[in-house]
Length: 149
Length: 407
Image (tube, rainbow over all chains, first blue to last red; front, side, top):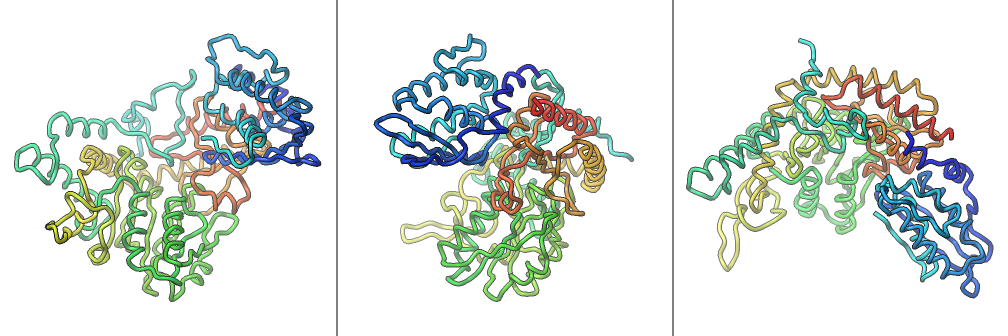
């Protein structure tokens, strides 16, 4: 039960129930689709990018609590940040959720996103937490569709 | 004599292990079943004492391995009630059997404007090969609808059978809903109109007696691994007169009569459809699996699972916010669960931590998920080795899930 509580922290449950920035932001000029064909998760990320800065970002779609909460918290973390910052945060996030669960979790610079540290214990769920990030990166690059398996 | 599930469980050593410190409750046999010791031992006996390539050597070992393989063909023929052992073709799994039919029978018989009829509850393996075939031939895939209980609407199925229908393909038992289709009735409707029938029996053979003669179908397919046998072997049964007319699927060794630089003539059935060295070990394992289920008795297994399903349905009804997809009156022990406010993947993870193994996702049946407006379900499937303690563990774990999500 303790590992489950670690995974499903109240912040995650809250963002699952009431996802923030759900929808397409006004003036969005970048977008990409993300799919996990194995589990049927599907989300789209929409960004208003101006001069290399993520002025606004939102998402739509359906998925499990981890993928929804991850997308919701990602949008909160990225508003007003540069695309270069987003890439750095993604790297730190990815390192956190894929790190060895026996090691000390490193969440510097992740802020609220540190709640996803519990995902380390559940390797099958890493792709749920990272789907929105892969989709975001695709939107910032050239758009299109990403698929995680 | 009553069914001794405790004795059955002892035949499956894996059921004695723990997962995350909890006793394993394995409820995913519809994806792939666990193996009794007898299956593993039969395979190891072949490899350790009798192995050589089959149908080739003149030496003793090859003879022994060939006899062991061909004995399984007889075994499968009897298991399915087939009239002729030559009607049993060994393939890798039901998916390969269905692809073989789409490729060989389908491409041989389908022309532009023709139709293939399937149902809305098909597994992708009995859907995609026909869809691809239809696209390729300019033919039309028709999909017979189901009602809200997950029951095929017979009148609609019948209406969709047209003079252009060249193949009708349907599941014996739905892998998501557990619905047992009225395969005799469906086969009769098709036969009256001269439409050949293909039945995906993957979810049926582990749970009930199957007699292809009594069903009156033309083709029947299943996978060994869902029948407590090894992965890597499946069966295609087809009526001899249809198989004999069909061109080969894979070509190469073992399936020829004679080869010259000018051309090749093909072997008769079933060898024509068994190109290359077969998976002898798996086939022998399948034979042991059939011996195992027949030793318990398919009717006894079916009766036991019926009672266990009734118990499970009653227990699951006590869990708040839980509903079941698929409520046909005639259904196998497959229970697709949807819990309010808890996504099936989250449910799957929480259940796993409680030692309960279920399948989550779309179950290779996306058109069916769309029909019910859900992206996925958590599916608990019962088999001959499950007991009330497995059901109780599932119910306990579902309560844990509610608790976790209550925050």
